[in-house]
Length: 360
Image 1 (cartoon, one colour):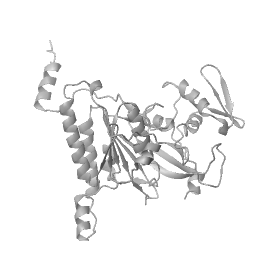
Image 2 (spheres, one colour; image 1 turned 30 degrees about the vertical axis):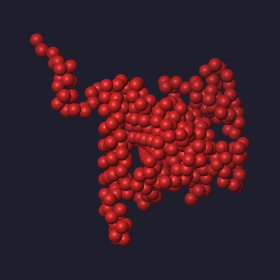
Image 3 (tube, one colour; image 1 turned 180 degrees about the vertical axis):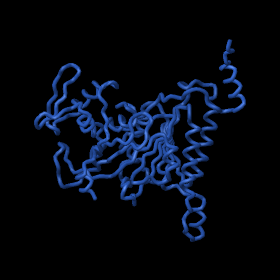
Image 4 (cartoon, helix red, strand yellow; image 1 turned 90 degrees about the horizontal axis):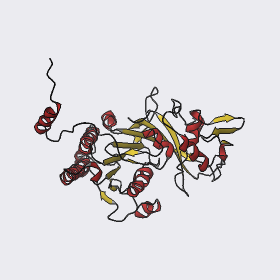
């Protein structure tokens, strides 16, 4: 007769031999909304869940594509509403208290911590020391009793290496010979291990650059492939022009930006899906922007003549022109959504080619 293996005894012995080793699974419990339902869904598979705690999320894009708006604005505001303490590590020195307040962020010292950083080493040291003290304080506390934390690093692209600093001081700017990508990869890898199993999330903004490969034309994220592999979620963002008035009519003036977001990596939903988010200068992000395209492409909302039709779970028929689809009607579709319904994502990019040509 086979003698059973004593799992509990082995678990105790291995955790004692290797201090700090995590045992079991650390499934995501806490999520923070990005402020846009469609982007939430493409990241997590849920319209209400955006960025998870316990993971590292990267928002990468060109200047003005909406990275800081989402990371330092929407995510920080929603984190505060959920009792999560945001800590912003600002390497660009571009965050203005009035701008954050206008986005609904509480800038009180007990609600938001902001630190200016300039070196990759400083960010690594900060997170390392913080998590060391955090684990000591909450070592015996169950997950739900620990203080929830959101780190926002804005941005990785502006961080310097010691080589950058030394060369600047000597006036000999030869470049860091590839040290920065390795440093960023190491930063993310270590951060993933430090926050694992804790209600602590990291959102990092990064820059992109134009691809020189005709067979792979997508913009490239700075920091190297190792950085992308180490991150749990990667969203690439591209800046387009918003030429619409409040009623959705096309105009010649630029009234804001359309942030074309492609979820390059996620373990919670299907990757390589895209959505366009509208961010008018006057009113801020439209949380429902992109939802209509998402529903139409999935066949949830169908075209009938010149209108788009949807039948709710209660049998109510909604039939409107594209511009006539209100937030109230879109919310009805979201409320009806169930995970086992027809999939809401496919391989088609929601960014029309003519839109991209218009903004070249």
